[in-house]
Length: 161
Image 1 (cartoon, rainbow, N blue to C red):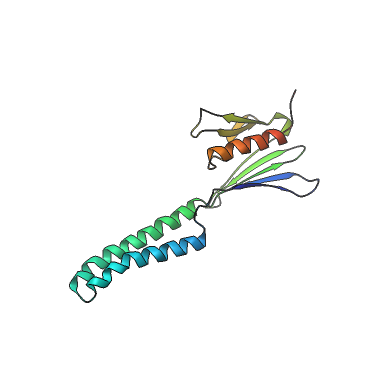
Image 2: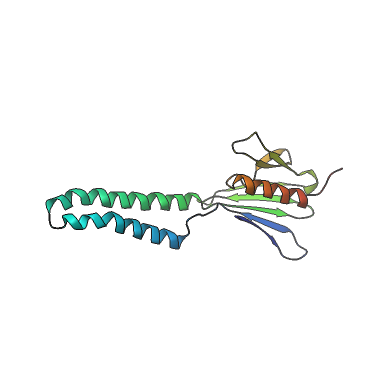
């Protein structure tokens, strides 16, 4: 799962969330290499003819565009959300690719995890409310992962009577 709880003894519990990567870096290299090979293979039939020079720019452009957009997808996914739960404070820090940070904190007694099953931009939308604000958490996770995250948060946050 693209989130994990990090607990180091009696101190605060930390939750790290990040977007899922379906294509790891090694798979990326293999995919680009195989695609380039398969696209260049038909050029062997026109090797040494003027047709080669007509087709080559389009094939190189297709390979470059594929490389560019996959790299852009990797850069856009460089995102980390970190939730810290301690006895006297809940902190949520979202760090984006360019280093911009969004921070939210509240007292754990007033924090409530909410699951918006039908409302929101995505199904099973999870928010934390408290301290006068409501913030999203894990919006980049799949619907099932957000449901699991909601269960984890509900168990770890203090129960109010």
